[in-house]
Length: 165
Image (cartoon, rainbow, N blue to C red):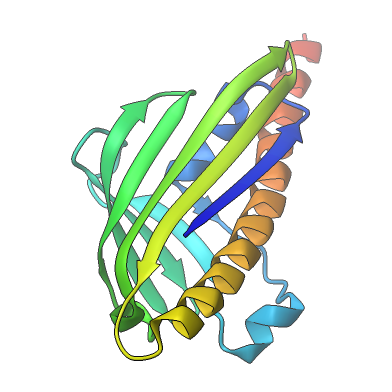
């Protein structure tokens, strides 16, 4: 199953990119996360920097998800595959891959696209597939809200440095 999300951010790709590799989400808990859907808390690259083959780890309030970086083009594209998880629904997932692409649309305007492809397996796989779609769609929305906040803070700080003599 596929999920495709797209947003426009009011900043350049280099303001957004670092947050795919190292980010801390806010403390809000949107409605669906109150029903046991794993809420993103933070992400980091275990080796300290993004590169092909390195491990991106997403921490949720229900455990961690480890992802191997399959494609890495700074400020443009990050593709990964889940390689391990401690989250309660990990046994439902046969395969999970994701991708972020950034496309500049102007000096301080960037289109961000996120794609997730996944397959549920086991008993009641179609129901699990739907539950995973709902959970991942919610995670897309929540993470994008946080990336927008974080990238705006970076952009604003950069603009402040340019103004101060």
